[in-house]
Length: 129
Image (cartoon, rainbow, N blue to C red; front, side, top):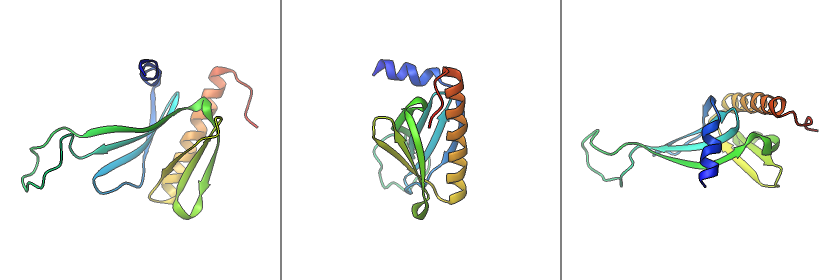
């Protein structure tokens, strides 16, 4: 996995779009110059206790839900009823991100489109069909 970490670290942050999230976490689609990444950040890093005091817990815990190189995204699809974006990969797998609104999903689609075009032009691969 060290190779994957270096690969993620070589990309530069482009933007992020908040996703629909459960109350205990914030989920975001992050787009870099090389990857699309779904991250989850929960309130505290430690085990949650029901203490009523505010602010004493650990640092927020960040979890990588999934990460895909832009070069592996074959096509994207908007799922209308659920405000979901489905990224269909060249391997046949699908990565999904759900957004709170159609506008948020549209922003994510624009970011993915721009990043994929930039990735294609920088790697001089043939355009997608």
